[in-house]
Length: 485
Image (cartoon, rainbow, N blue to C red; front, side, top):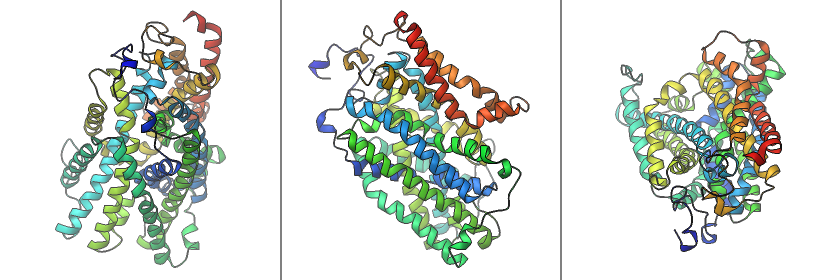
């Protein structure tokens, strides 16, 4: 820490949480766009759309909800990124302004534990792809064996999961600059993967028009406009709910606001819509090709051709998973865990903590249940994170008008001390945003019986309800009681 920073509390700061220097702000709009291409071209993006098609949704509804959701989530993404670029601070330091220097750990850990789940899911996907490579090269394409007791996963998949987990941990410890180069070089290749998969589907079905045939409607897909633009749109927004909060972890390296805004606008909505479209229409094509709709691209690519095709396809999936996991699911939680005790937990230690949690939650159990993955998981955590986003944006843009005291963000006796380091108004607003979604969430989990249509309707729009309720409560509470805190 420099001499200029010597007055800062060592329990609130370390080298990784300090504002970035001018020399480190080297990311151009193309670096940021490439970051988003690398994160968006991944298996969960594909399955977000393909899973909806497999459940009977039309490809237009699936892709439309996802595309619109990503245009919507771009707004909080750009707004929260502003502080990172302007002040060079990461997410857990930014939320000290709204939640307090100690209270910031509440939203930071909410975000961190969700990212741990995503890290585990993506690591399982990468491990599954690696297992396909091993089967193609050494086991003559043999199918999965019996699942291990207690763990509930096939032995080879478990070994490959651990191997891919170890590979990522090794890469993650190399630092943020290596991430910029990884994403920049891999982005064009990942786009080519999607195009190749689409071309394969066209060649097998004989025409592009056959890809656009919709599946028969189910009771769920007949739910109407509210269902499509409710649960589907909320799932799409919640998909990047974590990044909408911790985007300052990346935008702090941007050269300018123009770079972060244009880079995100180019990289996020277009890539998500493009890859979601591929996931939806290729899943449609699998019905005519294989006699069943295959929504999991790992399974699909394993059935496309011979050993060489399988190996190339799975290595491509490994790269796609790697670029997403390293950027989206490690950088943020590593900073969040570091914020809990900066003097003891470095960024690298935060990476290890994230990886360990992602392992012990047994993510394959979550991912293998499509309904839980798409709706219980995405809608449930979207309710929480939408609430955090509402407080952050209301505080930074309306209450503080983009003006922060950097020194006070790293001190316990400054502007952001509030009541013992906590801002009770922000905590109440956070809880108020979550509360309306609890009945629907508990019903989705099966903890309670069927909930009424009203609460289910609220839950279908969970992220939006949480965002606006939390933001309004925070604004009103600050105007009424802010001076007393």
